[in-house]
Length: 390
Image (cartoon, rainbow, N blue to C red):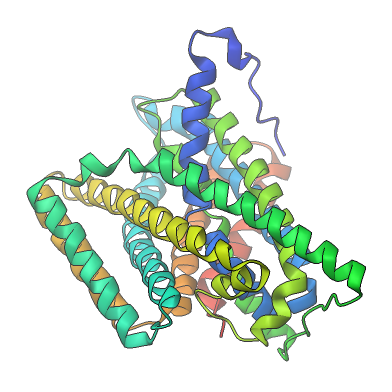
């Protein structure tokens, strides 16, 4: 992989460190958006005792995709900014922007479904119909906020949701580690059973889990605020940091996965938190509400911006939100949480597939072209064959 670092130090320019932090928090907020809430249950129902190896592989694959995004920041953006950009690159970039619209809308639905499942799970009322009703109500509330006040007033939630999310993740890691230490001392540590899946089933389900570590691509669209060097560093730092947290989280959660009995559940983390310490449940649900609502707002704003750009501002902002919220409600009533999650993975996998094609078009070295082509093939496989857990 190419050297993603720039020659200048972050401290070499006034305010560079602050810009780096700003650029890093944006992808981190997206990466941790829903992933930590569902990844334990997903891996438990898919690979059980081998969950640690699975998350390492998922994070490594995501880092390779991040390398493509960072390559495109460095090499594609200047090509697009040229007076006469290459026609193929321009068309692929436009298609990438279009594919992000349904990906964002699916993500809005996913975040709010997970939020609803955690709220209702706390009250032991998480039936499918109630989740759909609550999710629809939240979507309508978001639309009303946009039509009356505008969602821009909620954009500041991003930093606070990240702080709250990281705080509860570290709290759970520490609590799980102490629980495991006590179980080891007492000789009662139990690893989960390996689910009864064929190799093909396991691979295709794991393909549908890509969404849990997605979000690093957001740095690609911060060009109006941050320079290329800062965005490249921010993307790389966010992936390394989030991968370390996810791997540590799965490491300490694996000995508790037997409590799921092989069943995937969107709010399954509540069960583990209650087993370790009852007081963990309330902050976990609070973090779920904050993080999912903030992430949904961010994705809705991004989707609206993309629709406005695609239609060359022929539509008003309000109309774009009516479209987004209408489609999100329709998806809420036609698919369950894990079906929506797998659909989101496929949508973003297709976006990353197009980004790999863009990178192939611009790359000059044969080895790099081959690497991009291999990644493109893998992402196309995920787009076509990934399936939901459960």
